[in-house]
Image 1 (cartoon, chains in turn brown, purple):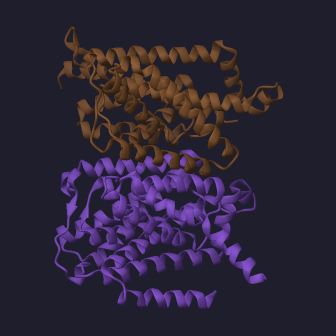
Image 2 (image 1 turned 30 degrees about the vertical axis):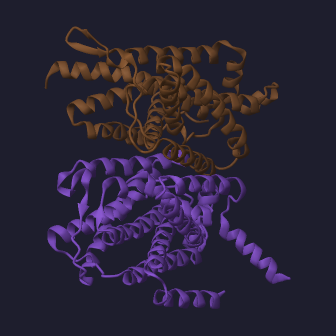
Image 3 (image 1 turned 90 degrees about the horizontal axis):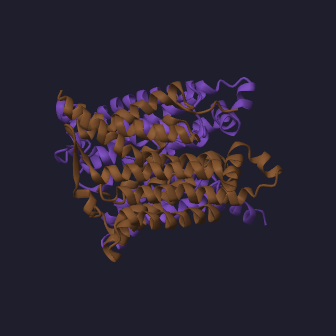
Length: 290
Length: 316
């Protein structure tokens, strides 16, 4: 096995992992706060990609700037989905919540299919063509920028959750909904904001990878499954777990593509998922459920 | 009620004589998806264990029968039971792991999805079973090879499958087994406190359900003459399997059948009228809206509501 190839796999894996982390942080935030699994997560991300595509082709906005708009639009979408749908079944059994979100996922995916067609699309960005050599390995500039922005956004989200009043209220509601209600927190508003922020994460993540990863409407499903993978491995509801899990899964996929073959790369992360589900269902960084 | 069932059966048995071949195709799909929905209903409805990986059982059943037929010349009439046994084995493995380790809700859903995806990726990468392109079955039109010149035999086979699964569900519902499953679904801890061996009965439900679903795989393979890993093991097929019993009423005997009678024609018609016009996802948008609407407004499904409506009118 060529060592350079392995090194290359590690670099690509870690750089792409930033996006996986951002995506998973959004999912784990939504779950941590309202115990709802967003089955439409990947489809929301694909909408982020298509928005970036529309911005790039319609207004000539580079996705590395457009991601701000995508995040804002997805924030609104998340807020809407939470207020109109999720809020009504917040106390329903998990199965019902999963089915509701599955319905939302089907609608989002297939509206995209009707609107944009089944062909794989990619957004052109001048960054995507540039590479720099770092010793024996080359670094895709687009991946590097994506990684930096994704990590910066995750850090900003961390700052929001730990350093602002609204963020602290969100964490309080995640920790103990009843307690948060008792001290006068507007839990319904917290839920809506958390869902919006979670969706904004994938909106930004989608825009950031839109020039790296060719996408089509069914991509959403596999992205959803990957996000579930990551948050289970990292620990449902744990922000740190989602961040580390994102890097791990991306690294596993990247090395899987090097050592086995590209079509087998997901086998690694699914096997990892099954092992985690069986032996440590709370995940690497999860807390034992009380 | 009994007479209504007998009359409905008589109509269904006589129908092929008057139906067009296109209408027969629709009915075949109604029965087939009704059958898969009913098979899922045993573990997903009665036992309340939401599996989103049932496509894996269709895939294992279908691939086994097809491979045995292509490589060993074994008739699919026998191969379908071999396939179903292997599907039941896979069901037992998934069930054992999930139930032994107490996975519930989302974690169980994800375990089933993960297993189905592992199967899909594995089958796509094994060239001996056709890899990503899948398998194709040569058409001979020989009934001994589960192949028929026109749709009518498939109609009766699909009907028989649906009735067999429904009879199984009925037998479970009437026995202590069914009561245990309902108790586990409603409150597993309370059921266990009363001495119900939840693990054992959930396992049984999973094995019966995956066996039946595996039988369906052979029908799928020898009705369509082709098997692709993405269609036979993919999440979209799992969604097709669960959506009918949920819309019709999960955990009820006639829910999956009612669900299939509502959704299959809806899906086929929108595919026919909108799919050709460049809107291939239209029927799935309808499914999604329907799923959301059912969860919000009719969480128990259509069948229990219909039954109450009929009872109220009968009471007057």
